[in-house]
Amino acid sequence: MRYLAGTLTAVGVLAIAGTAYAEDVEVLHWWTSGGEAAALNVLKEDLGAGGIGWEDMPVAGGGGTQAMTVLRARVTSGNAPTAVQMLGFDITDWAKEGALANLNSLAEDEGWNEVVPAAIQDFSVYDGEWVAVPVNVHSTNWLWGDKSILDELGIERPTNWDEFVAALQAAKDAGYVALAHGGQPWQDATIFDSVVMATGGIDFYRSAFIDLDEEALGSDTMKEAFDRMAVLRGFVDDNFSGRDWNLASAMVINDEAAFQVMGDWAKGEFLNAGETPNEDFVCFRFPGTEDQVIYNTDQFAMFRQGDAVSSEQAALATAILSPSFQIAFNKVKGSVPARTDLDASELDACGQQAYADFIEAAGSGNLIGSFAHGHANPASVKNAMYDVVTAHFNGEYDSETAVQELVTAVQINK
Ligand code: BGC
Image (cartoon, rainbow, N blue to C red; front, side):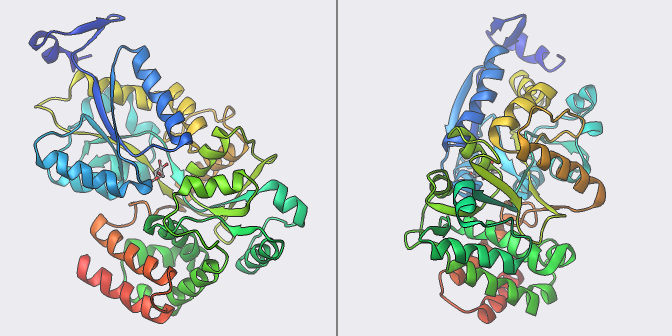
């Protein structure tokens, strides 16, 4: 409660349920699909019950690229939102600029250090200061399958690349869209996360995406990953270009497409459409990445409004990391809690697996940041790499050239 003191005396406040808040929280985010909006409602309601009003600032665009552009404009004009949904290196970049509030006192009171694993703290904490609060942990290396199509065609869970290609071919031969996909750079990159991991393994993924090692980026293994992307390109439908990710998920929901490779926010769409895991859809780790978790965590970074954290920011942070909220929210969002001390029995079958995978990977070093979702390298590098992956996916150049372009993109932007 120490955060309340300054504000209470300074401004006329609204008192509800014994706690007083001067203002609404204005939250900038990109959760605009059906499943995302349902999850966001859990947060709004949780805050509303505590007397905090919500001012919504949605900026559509999966992966948050557009949201980050709008944020830059807002901050530049001296009008930063109270809290902002942010990914990985974006948090670090804003923290470096000194724009984020220090939440250490709250973190200490509530024991965040003990319950949030190190890989997540790598992005919540900058230079010893908690500057963002993790609302979830997603992972990108998932393959979603339409249960009725797979059953009809007798397709078993693919566990390696060849089996996956055979399954896609069987679906295509039967007249289904084999791979539901939206041709947007961040979606192409999301598939690339899994393909690179499956092709080169975790050490290769780390060298290429996190260490930005030129030898790995320019290697034959990377060329093979691009060759595999070209194979997948042959399994998407003619109208894939520009399609939003949730519309691709809808193709699986409507039994038009057999598979989608997407982070587990896709599960939020399936659930929101009334579907049940293992009855209507199946969740597999992308073939060949069964032991790894390529993660991204949505965090709320609090922009400095004055010297201290405001009472509303503190209340938002406390609400987000509370055990009951972490379960309630992640059940709907498709992700898993960012704290490792919770009972996951309320999560659905895919969520229970994801939570167990997350905790295991956090302990064994197999929890590794997603390139596509800003947890492997800073936005400047990520965006330059997106361009290469997308140009290649759209046939602008071959795999050999893509590899060279990737090396150049990293050299120029890192
Ligand atoms: C975010 C998810 C979001 C997805 C699609 C990801 O970067 O982490 O929360 O649902 O983008 O918009």
